[in-house]
Amino acid sequence: MTNAVLKAIADRRSNRGYAPRQLTEEELDAIMLAAVQAPSARNTQPWHFSIVQDAALLKEFSDDYNRLQKADPGQDILFFGAPTVVFISTPVEAPTRFSQIDCGIAAQNMALAAHSIGLGSVILGRPMDVFQSENGARYAKAFGFPEGYTFAIAVALGEPAVSKEAHVVRKGLITRV
Image (cartoon, rainbow, N blue to C red; front, side, top):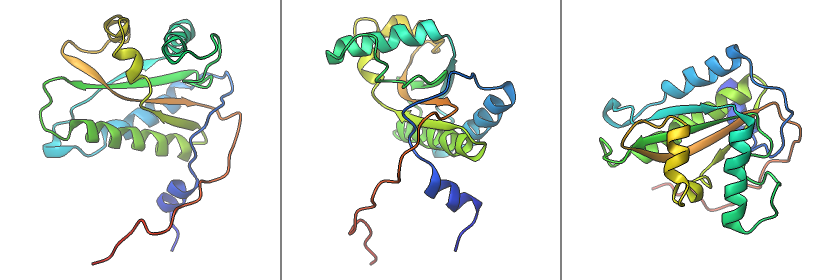
């Protein structure tokens, strides 16, 4: 049994290389509509989406990540050259204990929406290292996080410049009772 949604789930990959073309407003609007339509516990919608397309700011953030990881400076091992990164933040005083999960569901909606319109994405938890560093509060402010919000997850978006094969799905991950 195959339908468009199941096919999108099966075909979507985490892209780790992007063309420099910026997303169009129409593409970005479609992806963000999918994000805000994600389900959340008790419909709390415990998220804020900060769309960052400033290449210099993304490079600075990526360079800070490299410094923390003791990686080669100048390499983009965090965003892989994506021209757009959406940082999802959530209240520190979360409305439910599921707020982080809700943000992850919104990120997956974004990734599937991007794939459905021919774009690539990679869902990122690694920016957490930078937000927990001495520069974290400065980036939260620069990215427009609301007061009292903290980083949850990010999604890098763009036109894929590389492709990869699907991961092998391990056996034994499902139990029926």
